[in-house]
Image 1 (cartoon, rainbow, N blue to C red):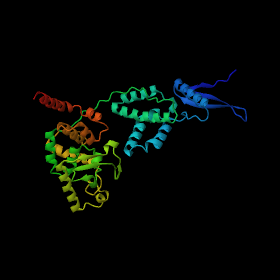
Image 2 (cartoon, rainbow, N blue to C red):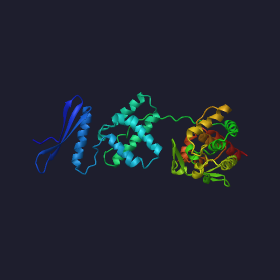
Image 3 (cartoon, helix red, strand yellow):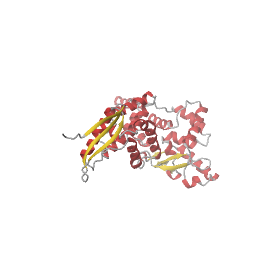
Image 4 (cartoon, rainbow, N blue to C red):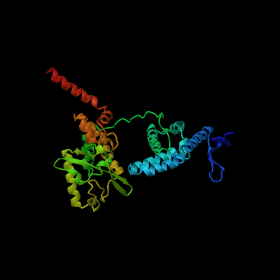
Length: 374
């Protein structure tokens, strides 16, 4: 009678012993088995048995998954992610996995996790009131980890493929109107924060970009600023980092009044001798003791002119959207605006600010009609 290749033996309620026959020992002649206890429904034991049989049939050189999801995630984070993403992004990855993935699936063997398991996980996240955006980000991180496992030949396929995710609704862009911008700048002009806020409103730079500007990045004659780095501040530590993407490295045109404000700011800094910290780093925007500014400090100062001017509260990041909508309203080419913002593509700019474009298209159509019917 032929010996069974594999067995599933009940050991209790939802407890199974998976046994795989590995052949006989060449020296002693005794039979060898792989035994592993698994807790859960029968289908998980069956998946493990199939995985072990597949591993055995492929021989000792197989890299089929025999580790838990936690072990696989740890290896992926350490060997792949850490060297590829920014420290802040790495922390975000770790947090998503620690909060939502590891507690539910972490102890499971990676090869036993199915699409249904992942779909159930996202259903539980929904029941706990987590947003569609959080579920989308979590799935993106988990899918990236599983894709790496496939490349490492630990899995035959990515179980995240085919997962149904909720549709993410984009938040409506909040941007200041022209009149609100005038009021804001008029109030902000009385503050030492005017150069920073005016630059943010008119260039559309990201906060991490304009807070990383050095005086050497400013060309006063050409009225330009070179965006070539970002700054990451955590507690008392700060580091320079690369821009968000390759297209984010760009040269941005500055308004005349912004250049004048920056010049006056530099003269004031040099005359006051604000410590050695800002001189060594050559940062433009620093604290009173010469350290890089934290975004929460800038946000606090940004809200003050808004409140004084009686303008609705918006986010500091909305100054970036304000710069884009002002440029569109002024008839600036979408290509130029996309380059100025450092977007990945023009199509992204068109999609992002599609709510502003119809009025510009109406104006363009009117001008063409005037040319044709003149």
